Length: 346
Image (cartoon, rainbow, N blue to C red):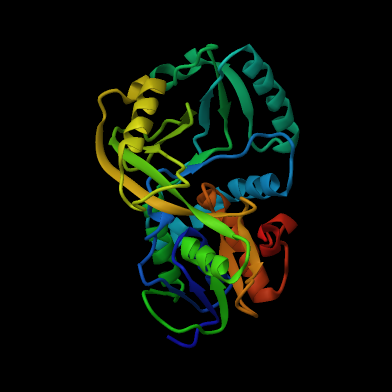
C-alpha cells in the first residue's frame, strides 16, 4: 500500500467510521488495532440507536439527532460498497408509561418533538393494544412510540465497515506505523493514557453486560423498559442489555448482574418468556468526564486528533462523528460542538 493519508489507531465504531468517511473522500486510510476490529465495546451485542428525550435541547442532542437522521444513508452506503449487511433498520422504539404524571410528560414531549425533530420523526403516545403481543407491560396502558430509534448489529456493522474500507483501498491491520494525519480512537485505553498525564481524570471505563437470545422478532421495534434495552436483530436474534458498572473486578466476565437484567427484561416484555440465551457478553465502554464524545485536537499528541468517548451512544453518533472528523482531518473544517472538545472533559 502507498503511504497512508490518514492513520487511525483503534478499530472500534468511531475509528472505523472516521476511516470510512475519509476513504469516501478519496483518502488512503490505514486502521491499526492490535486486538482487531470491534474487540472492545464495539464488539458488544445490543446495538440500540435511540435519541435522548426531545426537550432541553442542546448541542449534544442536536448532533445526535442529525446523526440518527444520517444513519440510513450512511449504512446503506457501507452495505452497498462492502456487500455485507450491517443489520441496520429504523424500526422505532417502545417505552412504557408508568403513571398519570409520566403520561402528561410524555404528551408534552410529543409536542416538543414535533418542533425539534423537524417533522422527520415522531414521538407518539399510543395505547398498548396498538402493538400486539410484542408490546411491553405498561402500568398506565400507554406506550411512547418514537420513529427515530433504529437498531444495528454491532458485530455485523463493524465487519461491514472493515470490508467497505477494504473496497476503497484501505487497510485494517493489527500493527503498523503512523503515516499522514493521525486519529486516536482507542477507547478506554486512550482515556487511561490521558488520565495518566493529567492531574484530574479525563474519563473512565464503565463495564456493561448483555445477552443474546434465540428469538426472531426482526421486524419489531426495540423496547426500553425497566432500564433495559431489548433489541431484535436482523439475524433472527434478540439482544438484551445492559448493566452500567463503575466498580468491577473482571472486565470481561458475566455474572449475576446480567441474570438480573435478563429477569427484568422478561418481566417487562412477556414475549421474551422461554427464549434461550445463546451468548453472554461483557466489556468496557469509554465514558468521558463530560459524558459527550471527545472530538478534535488530541490533548497529548500535538498535531494529531482524537475521537473517543462513545459511551452508550457510539453507534448512534458514528455517522456524524465520522463526517465531522473527516472534514477536520482532511480539510481543516471544524464543525465540532464546544461541548465535544477535549477541554470540556478537563
